[in-house]
Length: 233
Picture 1: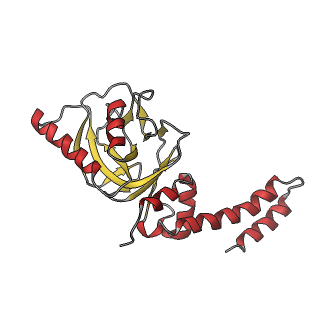
Picture 2: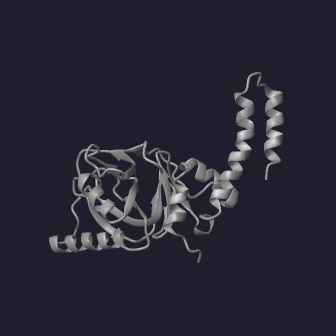
Picture 3: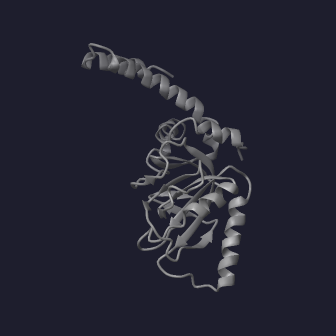
């Protein structure tokens, strides 16, 4: 198994998630139409740089109380936090809201962003809701399905299993890259290849962008630029 360091993941935060998706089309062309979110999402802090880390997965519900005793609820929540704190890091929390109306109650707000940031998480990707946007932990990113005011009966159902967020299937330990555009799963063996793929695509696009932005641009110059771009390897 390819060893991935925190520095490897941090390097990928230099590029937005669309750029990572483009680069994956070079390194993993078979994944061109899979592995990323396809639903409209909201981003709490669009000016933050992208996040990239090992997934910590969980499922939640909020429309009805948990069918557990208070002691069992406490034990379940503590077990979840222990899982979030586990190595390796950094981490990105990926939570699927199982309710028929996802986001009925918010798991994420002032308290949970502070806890998760303290436990080494960079942010969360969820189809659920978020709140307390003016009081969330500084630098902690939230990419979610919606914004809402109440936590209702929100509780963790399970953690560490497979989740599906808007078509993006994530398993515990997968590498997830996210920003205001959404999120994508990065195959482990592609992490170290992506910087070179980004550099290649940047050089190819530069030829077309330079032509398009220059005075006198026309279809002939576009065709010529596209030809030069295709020759870059």
